Image (cartoon, rainbow, N blue to C red; front, side):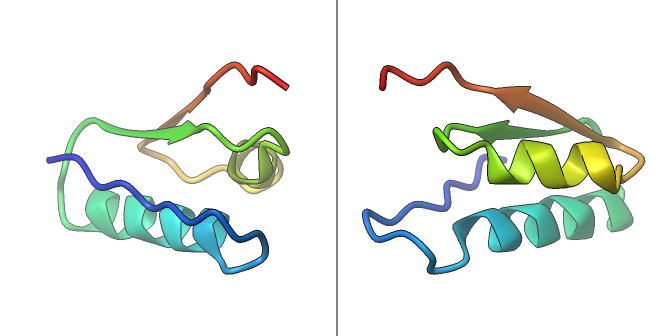
Length: 65
């Protein structure tokens, strides 16, 4: 299963929503769960480095900016 959370506008909760969806997938037994953070600010990756969630692998997509 793939879920994409996207919006052109900043500050609408994309990173937060992505983290919660990934954590919910882990709770429900989906394995593996990979969160691809394509945001140039890498908010989701930074958050999960600070507060890791067991079962979520984070991949930072390279930014072209």
